[in-house]
Length: 155
Image (tube, rainbow, N blue to C red):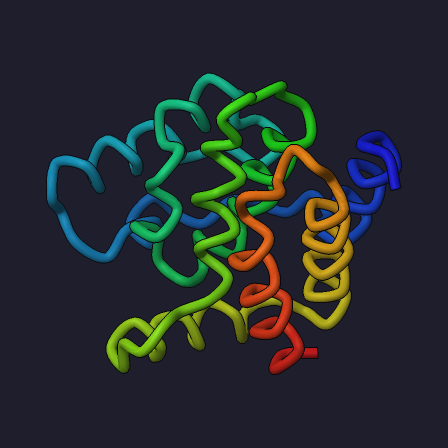
């Protein structure tokens, strides 16, 4: 599936809704979280620029479960639209869909994943399947497989 088809499916799976309130974007007030909140507050996922995503490439886990669910599509859109020979954003995004042997993280992960609808889980699966077939993401094949396995728990 090509990027334009995936972008259409992304928009179908994650319809235009109001963004989370600024006080529900982050769960604590460290400097990184405050910067994240300031850069995302009041913006729909469609309004978040690729530059903002690049500035927060590895910050997706800092969001609350509600904000994580809401802004994941902005990160996916970034992966689909931007040529990144190092696949940095994709790598951090993929890592957000699975946990490994950490009970505290598993609870947070479960809370995030349960916010997605069945349609959204279906899209995430399609997106990851597409990445898995792309040679650009070959070094992430194992991580993608773990993420796909994790998503089956929520279908």
